[in-house]
Length: 465
Image (cartoon, rainbow, N blue to C red; front, side, top):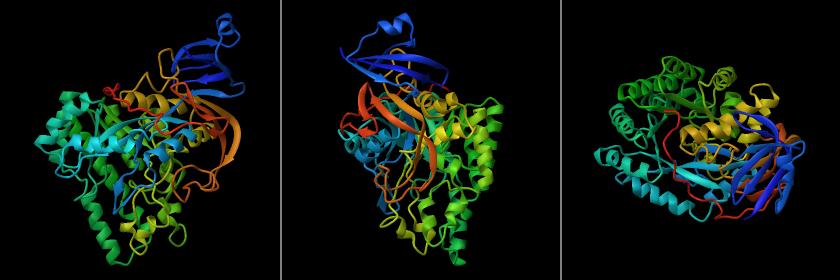
């Protein structure tokens, strides 16, 4: 039996803050006891970690990543090996990535393809959602078998006609199936048919720069689609989770539905909390670095997102990590914003940016851990194995220095992408040591992990629905 003892830190979970020592045995949390008590002083271990003046927090759970994802004629630049290593650097010890059903193929075929990409390559633990790109009688029946395999959430799109788009009838049928089998439908909510009209019209007017990406993907078209999928879920009697909420009007739709008592949930991402259309409008082609969908919004939308996180109308902050290099990928859209691959890097910086939100007064420490660790674990059937520090939980533990200062830069990040969306941003707080199932992955600011340490996580059902 291997034992690790973490002494002297402030343990912060979604529900508690206490000066406690943490005992780890064979990869799980064995016990917590107040620092200096007889119980804590009696513990012995093979290895002791001094966490004095540090926070001891659960490893982050990033429930929305896209490693090695084909999109727009290219593939996202982080592999499962590079992407999970970067996640570890940022204090994230679990990701949930998206397998994609091939058009005309089965859900299992898509899942098997993503297992092949990830197996033996991940530094931290991982699970999968399933993107349903071809909703039909056969794929609806297959949803049950995927839930048995630990894939309990299914993503559909009201955007990207001809690629990933599902019509209202297909969405309703999938929601009805989920109402019966306990699955959770995740929705990319934008009116893709209307957006395609606006794209065509903008290009015809000669509006081709990256900033026009945000203008054609109008906030009202996000709000309209959000309203629509919420009401389809209500008709089906199913819960629904809306991904990457960026617009205040969309937050209002979620808040209204939740006030009605509906099982409606939403996530936002750091890019919508910290970046804006000012970035899309950067000179030359620089704005392409910030092209993602849903798009960045004018800065005045941020207040509604922060408020939604405080009031629990938004439950989760994920990254939608989908990086494309500026040179060789983003520049496919020079002269035509509609050809810029949609996606941004972020898996390494989510925990740090949300701690900066604590420093700035937007969030409490416990809410930081809730939206970054506990809530995504509960939402996607991983709690209490992940997302908390409690006896029996996996020993995914981050020793976090809340006083250290750092400057985010592509020169120092570990994601496989040639730019940073937060280049030059000064933040307070830094990951110091990371344990994944009790095994050091980051130690005193150095990577000591290995590809293949991370294991696949079969997930249970949503614990909020």
